[in-house]
Structures are given as C-alpha cells and as structure tokens.
Length: 227
Image 1 (cartoon, one colour):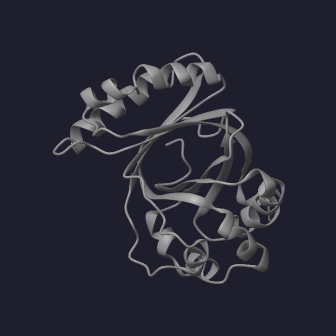
Image 2 (tube, one colour):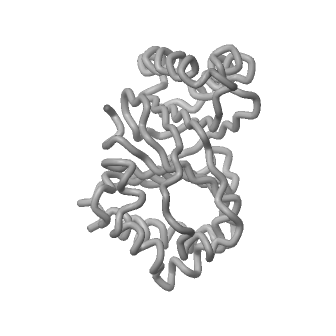
C-alpha cells in the first residue's frame, strides 16, 4: 500500500497567526525529530490550510495501530519537552483520528491534500467502504490526482495523556477519513464538489455532516531525515 504501514495518526487543529512562526519552528525542528525517533513511526507530513487560514493537518504513518499505545510513544506523550509544553495550548479545536488504514493507493505526499472527515450511515459501513474503495481506484489515475487513502478511527485503550491535559479541551475524533493527494488544487476541488459532495456521499452510504478541507504541504520527513 502507498501509506508506509497499516495505521496512521491523522490530526487537524488551528494555530493562531501570532504563534505560527514559533509553532512551525518547533514542529519542524523538535517535534518531527522526536516523533520519528519512536519505533513504528514511518513518515510524518505537515500541511497548512490551502486558503491561507490557520488550519493545520498532520499525518503520521505507522507500522501498526498498536504503535499508538506502545510504551515509547506513551513515554513521549506523558513527558513533553518545555517547548512542547509551551506549544500544546495553541493546538485549538484538535481532532485526532487514531486509525487503521482501510485502503491506500498511489502517493501519500503531494503538493496538496483534500481531507474528508465522515461517518457511515446506520448499517452502511461495509457498503460505504466498498464504494470508497472503488472511487479510490478511479481517482488515482485522474489528472491532477496522485493518491487516495481511507482511514478508520479506533481509540486506543490508554489513559488521558499529559499532552492532552495541557491542551485542555477533549480531543474530537473522526470516524472515517478520506485523504486525496494531488499536484493540482483545482483537481481536488473538482472531486470535492462532485464525487465527494454531500449528495454523492449520501448515495455511497455516508451519514450527513462530513467536513472537508484543502491543505498545502509544508514538510514531510522519514526517520532518517530528522534523526
């Protein structure tokens, strides 16, 4: 599969403009290095809102879902550095999808990403997965698109961590996530308005209320890039 493992941690939050520079410095030069040193973390990617807003999308590709409850990862979550401690309160409106990879085709890193957070309608989980699998197979050959990936959230059985406590408000979750990557933002917007629009997703078996966003790549790293 295109994602480097059987699991992924996908996250969204907002960072105010006045702390953006400090946040990006921290995330690029300390946080990525720290996370990529944890066994099972295979690739990290950070994206920022494509419209210049304060939205952030981060995805860590993981060997297995069990990486999210592993001792090395929990050790970091419960012993944040001073810089991390200072930055955590600035992660506003946090959404964390601690997920299994259901489908993954094509590239996982490109200039732009469309993310769609959604849930299946009652009794439609399998039909939605099958429909999105078929759509992913079609999308990856479309001009402007390079890959598409479907995730399914499962909360690990762990206690609330120190980082979560510092952030304050409880993290939200996304039940399913579809990520479409590409080199043309216009192509992703066309997909969002057609095959992944409200009515189209309802026909595929999705419940109302999906949330879509467009992002531009800031940084991507493998463990050896930031060691």
